[in-house]
Image (cartoon, rainbow, N blue to C red; front, side, top):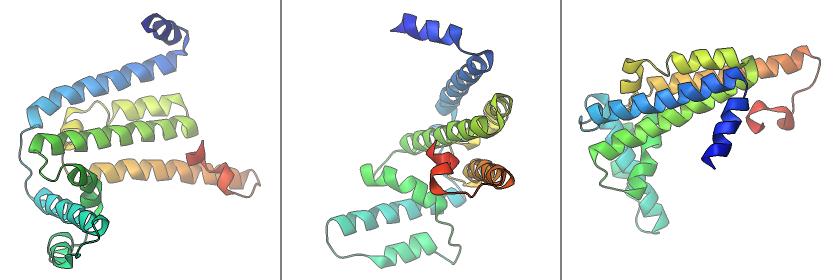
Length: 194
């Protein structure tokens, strides 16, 4: 099996080889940085995002168990003082549904995994829309920038929002190309389906 993978790698186009190497470097660097930031407790806004995620997971458990639904916890921890920004809480909630008492390391690992998957998805969309060179650039910056990688283990939504904006921009470019070609966009022609 390893021999066949090695043979496939050697026969792949050069840009595909570079992308695979960059993905490997990203994962290795991220694994190293996880050892450095894995035990750092959440702080600042991350505390409220963490509390919101726990409230959402408790809400899911209440709904699934058909028990009483405690909306006070949602109001207190998700909406709070009116700063309703549930994106990070929604992203963290599945972890707390599976493990209500997740450790700090588990939270950091989960956030790092989600951000890595999102970066790989964004690079895939960029590659499909703009080509290999632009995907390589995305995998280098921000994919190999240590400060970016350290912050990818945090619950702040800025990095995730940037990657989602990249994906949406690729969809917009695809839509514009369809319109310029004189075709009507339809569900089957959306890029996310490919």
